[in-house]
Every structure is written in structure tokens, then in C-alpha cells.
Amino acid sequence: TPVDYIIVGAGAGGIITADRISQAGKSVLLLERGGPSTGETGGWYQPDWAKGTNLTKFDIPGLFESMFTDPNDFWWCKDITVFAGCLIGGGTSVNGALYWVPSDSDFSTTNGWPQEWTDHAPYTAAMVARLPPTDHPSTDGLRYLEQTSVVVGELLKNQGYSNVTINNVPDSKDHIYGYSAYDFIGGQRGGVVATYLQTAEARSNFQMKIYTEVLNVIRNGSQITGVKTNDTTVPGGIYPLNPNGRVILSAGSYGSARLLFKSGIGPTARLFHENLTDMIDLVAGDPTAGPNLPPSSEWIDLPVGYNVSDNPSINLVFTHPSVNDYDNWADVFTDPPQADVEQYLANRSGMMAQASPRLNFWRAYGGTDGVTRWLQGTVRPGAASWNTSYPFNMTSTGIKSRGRLGINAALTALPLVNPWLVDPVDKTTLLQGLNDIASGISAVPNMVMITPDNTTNMVDYVNDYDPATMDSNHWIGSNIIGTTAGKAVVDVNTKVFGTNNLFVVDASIIPSLPYGNPHGTLMSAAEQAAAKILALAGGP
Ligand code: 6FA
Image (tube, rainbow, N blue to C red; front, side, top):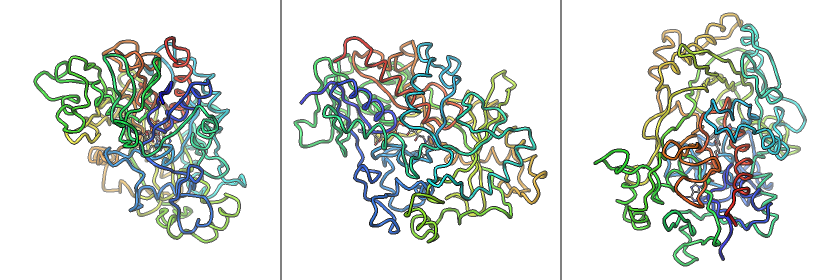
């Protein structure tokens, strides 16, 4: 039966939007291509040591690092070449869950948001009310494995940083550090799945279908009438909309861009690269997806996939005799310390109640081009990809570099132009930040930097850094919001330009990287988008 709203993708953006729109009484169908994640969603994938409980890999925060080392990694989208979660919760079911309450700057016009979006406070407050952050996720209120916080805290204090509770002062991100904050609840993964999805599922006007991949939207010119899926149990795989119904794409920065291409919306050779093959032309050449495209006279030229940004991430690795590296989290899934298992199973406390990050810090740098950039550091004891000691990575925001994402002839989604350190001042600023940290080491007794080692200078280290490991998984901007069609993909109501009833609500609409890891900003944006969509005339 037709519905008022079809929402594609049960990630951070899709779940919040589905909850708020179903709360308003509209009929909502949430389509997710992946399957269950946490125990609450019917998830089953668990370590042997959790057998007999309903805790899965996705529930237990201490298993975060094992997402990257597990040979049975069914949760990653196999048709996207960067990390993207294809399961209920999307990225929020597999991520490190670092959670920052957005600042005013994160929604500023300087950051590219339309004026109508700058008053984010009520939406941010609604998000925090549903999902409060915590910087002490263990249920006993204690913090574990904090040696790295002590050592790096000393280094930062020497350099004039102040120790704060980060989410109490969202607008200060210069020379501050504090304990890492998460959206874990009760010592387990919380996020949108444990909160917004639960209230949505309690409503009779809400329905979620899993293992249901949307292939394209069905449109008649500018009017969307439904979506075509891989579901063989419904005629043509088609889910229809009510006459005034709407489709909202929340399939992630790569997923939503690809869905637009497959629906005849995006760069075409006609407009952007005459005589070359561009995104929609690639779809047209595909034997399965090509026939589902609307006629070329109805293709909509928009800069889908451009304006893409991700924090450039560089690791520095140190040793210090006080630090317990937890064996680089190598055995957390198969064979963690028995005492930690018992403690966690008893009351969700201890080592397993937290992901690897321990401390975060920020510093602002004025660039030679007059633009301020903010460097974020994330301090972790051990990590899956390192074989000794403790790394932290530095990322930067306020950056000017942009890349491009798209698809190849196999319709695999991938970066077409890497977005990291393209702008020369982005690079010199990041180098300055790395050097400032390195210069503080000698003042901390027994702290040694091993990567880069003492035979490698920082410039060479950054120049030779493998771009594949510079990815912060913070992809934004591919369906950038804005006021002008052609410059932006969606308008101030998140409606795709040139359509009557197609919307995008996910990380892809965010115009510039926020100060911190982005999903806090995204969740506030989803609250605001749902309100704007409901208020927009002409809907169901
Ligand atoms: N963000 C943070 O704020 N803090 C972090 O610590 C953090 N860490 C990570 C991280 O460690 C990893 C490995 C990754 C991948 C991301 C991290 N992020 C972090 C980023 C954060 O998770 C993302 O910014 C956030 O999840 C983006 O939310 P979106 O709503 O934009 O998109 P998702 O990818 O979460 O969800 C898309 C959903 O759509 C998925 O469930 C997918 O299966 C589904 N989907 C895609 N195509 C579809 C289709 N055609 N049909 C149906 N469903 C589809």
C-alpha cells in the first residue's frame, strides 16, 4: 500500500527523520539494504564470550577496534570503496561513537549553511534530550586505561591547553582538551538505534523493511511516484507513494549520491564535461540500471558528488613506560582478559564499556590565507592498525580542500578526487600542528615518538603519507545544501533542486566539516530537516 514518506537508509539521518515524521502522524516506510546490528534489532553476531546474552559485536563498545580486523566483516558496504556501514544504524552501528554537541560555528553561514539553518539550538537541544553524551560510559562511573590521557594531558598543559568537559563548552575549540565523549548508553552502543528507532517502531504508522535495497527513485519529470527495489515479493520491486507523498534519501554520502545518479540526477556529459562520459552516462551504460533511467530529456544536471570533504587524518605514534596498550585490542573479540569479560557481563562496566579513544583536544590556527583551521587530536592506547604503543591522530577542520566522489562503470561508489590536503595552506597548517605536538614531547619525561621515527622529518612523513589511510570516514558535502541550483544539490528544505518531492537528509548535505567528528552535527541537522520537511507546504 502507498505511504506518505519513503525513507531510504536506516543510518543516523534516516532513523531520526523517520522517527520525527512518523511522530507527526504520517505513514513512513524506512527501507534499509542491510540487516540487524545490535541485539535489540535482532542482531546475532557476537563473540563467543558473550554467548547466552543478547550482546552483539555492535553493542559492545570495547569491540570497536575489531571492526577493522575481523575477517567476517559483513557489515561494510561491499560496493563502496571506503568504509561505510550497511546494516541497521549505518555508520553509527560500527563507528567509534565519538559524539560532540555541535557549536554555533558548525551551523554558521561561514561554514556554508543557509541563513535559515543557523538557529540550530532547539534541534540540538532535542537531540541531546533524546541522546545525552557521556564521557564516562562505564556504568560504575569510573574511567579505565587512562594512562594516555595523563601523559598527553601533561604535554598539552605545558602548551597552555585547559582541561574541560568538552560537551559543556561546545563553542570553545581552541587550546582545550578533555575526556572523549560518546553516545553510548548504559555501557552499550546507544546512538539512534537505541533511541529514535525504538520510538518509531512503537508506532503503527511506521514500518521498516531490511535487506531491501533501493535501486532508484521512480519519477515522472519532477514528480517522484515511488522507489524501485530489489524486493521480488512486490510487483516490479516497486514501493509506491501516496499522491502527495515524498521520498527522502538517507543512504549516506556515497549511497545517496549513487541513488541520484541512478535516478537521472547529477553530472552528465552534456553539461559538465562535453564529449566525456560522466556519472549518469555511466549508469546509462549499465545493462541493469540503464533501462531504469528516465529519458535523457528528463535528466537533471546538478553537482552531485562535488564539494566533498573529509578530515585529513595523520597518525603519530608514541611510547611511554606507563602506558598499557591493551595488546592493541588484537584479542578483544576472540580472547580478551577474563576479568574484563566478567566485569562487563556482570554490569556493563570496565574496559569493554568504552571504545578506544581516551582524550580529545583542539587548537585553532590562523592560516597565512587569513582562514582559521582547527586541529583535533584523538588519543588512543594501542589501535588495530598499530603494532606498538599508542597513537593519536590529528585531523583538521576549517579546511578549504575539496574532492569529488562518484561511481565507476561497475557502479561501485568511490572517491574520484581525494579531498585531503589539496589546499596548500591546509597542509602547512596541519604540519604546524603536528610539529607543535612533537616539540612538546621532550618536556614529558620518557615520552618517545616512534612514528615518524627520529630519522624522518615531519614534512616527508606527511608528503609520503598513504592517502588510503588519511581517510577519517567523515565524508560530507556530496549533496551540498544551498540556495542556488547548480551550486547546491538540495535547497534550504533539503529538497533536491528540480524535483517536487525528493529530499536528502544525511551527511551528504553538510556543507563544511564541523569542529569534531560529524555525527553529532548530522543528528542535529536531521532534527532540523525533519521539522522543515514537515512544515513545507504541498506534502501529505
Ligand atoms: N562519526 C562520529 O561522529 N564519530 C565517530 O567516532 C565516527 N567514527 C566513524 C568510524 O569509526 C567509521 C569506521 C565510520 C565508517 C564512520 C565514522 N563516523 C564517525 C562517521 C559517522 O558514522 C557518519 O558520519 C554517519 O554514520 C553518517 O550518517 P548517514 O545517515 O549520512 O549515513 P550512514 O552511512 O550512517 O547510513 C546510511 C544507511 O543507508 C546505511 O544503513 C546503508 O545500509 C543504507 N543504504 C545505503 N544505500 C541504500 C540503498 N540503496 N537502499 C537502502 N538502504 C541503503
